[in-house]
Length: 362
Image 1: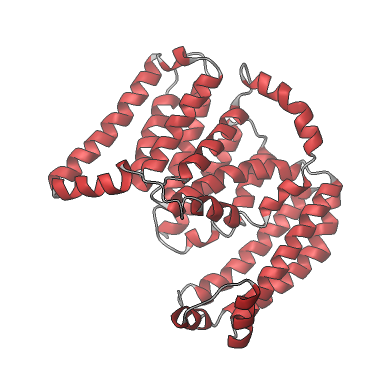
Image 2: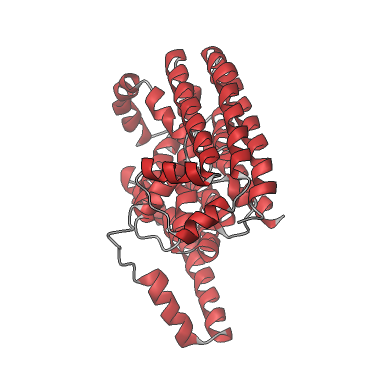
């Protein structure tokens, strides 16, 4: 129940951030529905962890700060945003604390409005952030062993040595977790986007700067993913921010771009489903490993073969791929809203047997 509540709060936070950033209701809803269909988000409703709640608090903090920094006068949303940033940091780690703060600094620098941060709401918000984090550190150090806690804090939060062999893993996890929706990029009319980009950038320095704030948050989140201690939490937060932009792009696809995107998505779902079926049997699992040049140890091979639900899920995925090809792709020529709704329904139907049959084995 706690995991499902965290996921629900994350979806609400995605919608709120989208609306504050300037998206209309359909685009903000599309971002939430798209996130609901992603492989990185669906398991969060089953496995209990801080990732969903930390992401929700971070997105709500970004929404409050995006609203507050665009107002010329003092507002309550700026202090509230800093408090939420502190709570997000206490829940998920330093990544969730730094993302709203660094995004605010980049946004103020872009608009050349550092004086806005010197107003009472900005100063109060930053003071509240320090007070909340400081009180938590004081309480934890008093109730636990201070030396052991400070050592753990230094190893996991303060010193961030970038491991050259693993720095790319959070970004790769976020990209793979957004599949097949990341293929929306292939259907975007980039010529039209690049023609209007200079005017949009110039306008974002004066008014309608919500989308610029959202882009800055996504870029900074990707950069913070590299040294992040919690790989999954950072990837989920970055994927949630990207889902809003992908949802907006999905609704604006041309008929040709929509057909291209849904064709790629159908192919990806079909290939993944066939791979799941193949992973359920020993001979085909070995052949699949040779095909992708992946060697499994005996324990890993036994663990994969022990997941008896893989062929069932693969079969359901093949049926879903057929539905995507026969129903969704033709419907996309008349608009992507109904197609996205059908894809969300398919994702929910696929998630139920996975939760009931696969999760207990894991």
